[in-house]
Amino acid sequence: MVLKVENLTKEYGKNMSLTKALDNVSFSVDEGDFVAIVGSSGSGKSTLLHLIGGVDTPTSGNIIVRDKNIFQMKDKELSKYRRKDIGLIYQFYNLIPILNVEENIEVPVLLDKGKVNETFKQELIEILKLKDYLNYLPNELSGGTQQRVAIARALINSPALVLADEPTGNLDSNNTKEIVSLLKYLNEKYKQTILMVTHDLNIANSAKRIITISDGKIVSDVRKDNSVQTTTCQNLNSEENKSKNTVNEESYENTQ
Ligand SMILES: Nc1ncnc2c1ncn2[C@@H]1O[C@H](COP(=O)(O)OP(=O)(O)OP(=O)(O)O)[C@@H](O)[C@H]1O
Ligand SMILES: [Mg+2]
Image (cartoon, rainbow, N blue to C red; front, side):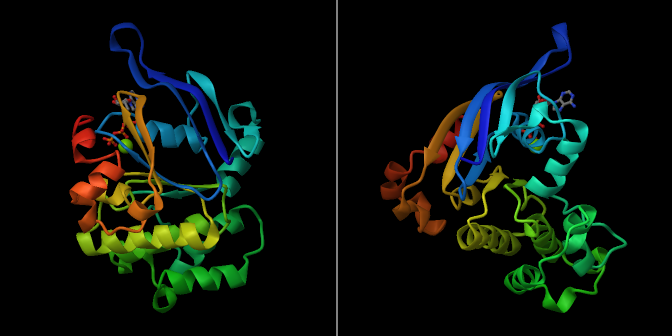
């Protein structure tokens, strides 16, 4: 097991303006899993990722990553956890504008004064089709290419967890398909554990497991069987797959 979330609660505000962004959430994730987290706007998805990423603290509860309770870490250990154990992919890429593509990919390693694994870096560059762009600055690239750079940056340290918050939220449908299939490929090739927040059920269906949250609570947690896993998005609407795959449009809409 790589991640254990135990009775996680996050409240914002007080008294009348109290919001329970997360309400006693518990689940665990095995090494090499690809988990989609779905739910309507305001359901608590980003709050959950921020807590797992160690950039926010909970009102109560624990998060254990590779046997370490991240909320018991001292500041220094927690910053190291954020740099080495977590790879982040955001909706708006968040590349460093003054660094070129190659430098952006290396940032997490250099921040940690580590040595770049050149073989792995070249593999990522190849898989993510970035060879022709290594000297470009982020603002010279399309959104899809910027997101491919962000994926390389997220994976370069082979972190315990890659956390992606709406990674295709700003992309057209072709780029969306490409980014999702790349994440799926990298998950399979490197057994890289990925947690991906998305609004889009077709995207969620590319993952191996779908956790749905509503009002800060987990309302369903479904592992897809292999037959559904290999099905294309188009076929996921068929009646046959709806019955196999308990997260269907209907149950998803109930969370909206
Ligand atoms: N810093 C904050 N201060 C107060 N309330 C907050 C804060 N951050 C989040 N919330 C509230 O917590 C709840 C969960 O927010 P969160 O951003 O996790 O939702 P989300 O599922 O990521 O939504 P979206 O799909 O719109 O990104 C919402 O009601 C939100 O308004
Ligand atoms: Mg969000």
